[in-house]
Image (cartoon, rainbow, N blue to C red; front, side, top):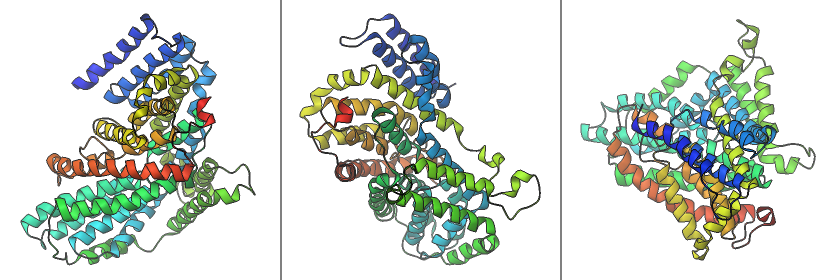
Length: 491
């Protein structure tokens, strides 16, 4: 066991016991004080990963009823939040694309249309990675893109000089990781923290963040952040010349030819996927005709269709006669859904016991700062913290705190929770920061110093980008007024 995990394993419960035996802070009820202790315990285990993150997330189910913070029913309700099922449906749709190879065909077709210069190839990989990771998990997208990229690198060895290859290989690897991370910011299902903040706002304040609303914030960030990252990689950090890599298009075409024409399953999954996206985008218009239609219901409908639409394969067990089977669906990261529930249950307790109001009042002194400065400070803190910790765990731990700070300074919680959430996914410096970083590091083509040297500039660039764009976009998309605490947050 590593030192960090060993320390965290003991530190979490010790902090909790200190809260149990110590007197509550001034202005706090006993239940709020206990909630703070549980929150510190969970945050410690989440940050150090002393035990599996989903296991930590089940602590509220045990401790809240015992300490009288909430009944088992109330403690368990957040584990069935609708946003959990939105993400579950999205996961199953993504698994359906992976099972039939549709995501790989999309990537190859994008790459077939780019030029043969190294910078054009990097741009093509970034575009394909970002587009796919808006809908498929960034981990799966990176793992799918990596073998294709390694084939390009092998081809380029005969076309570029040694010095150029030492630049092109790392740049291509980093471009894939960074594009998949950035693309995930674009939609609610693109990366887990996005859905987590939506669930938190709905569970705590009854405020819905719709799929289209999030895209109005996320897609502009992707549209600006992706070209910015491309320029940084190809113009400032790496230099691999403009010599074309001959044979690249032939290699991609060969990969496509070996895949054959689009199969019936690929076409069927594409139709289901496009139907789901269409319904998500038009739900605000359709809600008048179908009042009960929700983003979650649409995602679950799409997932269920995969289990009933026949596959071209009609041999083997009956369950494998359809586009999706349960053996494939079981690959879904169920632990992430438990983490959702644990984070939302903790947030609910922090709010119901009055701890949130107390934290907001305690930090209200920063209300004299301009709001944009507060957003920048939070963004910097979260970006660099999540270099060393899970972005999902960081988001789960920080959301109640950010909302409390916002209320304490008389601002809409959305102003601080959304930038903190996006910042948690914008870590580019270290392999441990995000799964895409770890995957490309494992290729052996990029070193930690190269990743850190490039990532520090991206961290700083995204600090500015997230802070400024979110500051304006949140006001526009959600109708947030600066200095006005909405009635739903003041209750």
